[in-house]
Amino acid sequence: MSQQVYCLYCGGKMEDGEASCPHCQAPSHFQERGFAEGGRLRFILYFTLFAIAVLLVALWLPR
Image (tube, rainbow, N blue to C red; front, side):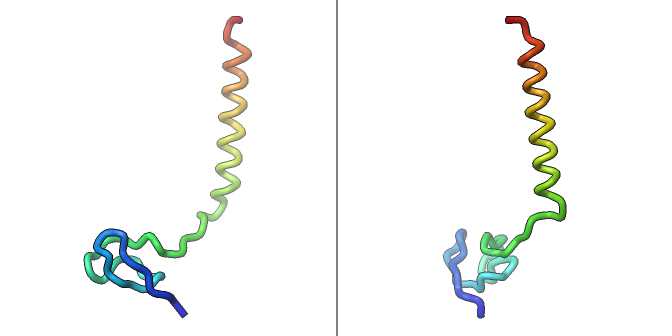
């Protein structure tokens, strides 16, 4: 059973799973969205590589 929510743009009532508001056609911010497949692992990998790069630059700079 879905519940009624209000559009952030026009204030009209809509179902919580709708892709857009039926009144103003604005995109809904109440859609259930999942993470992209492998998104968390990719984030951890990029963050780790960024942290290593920052550490190497910090060690390379003259003191």
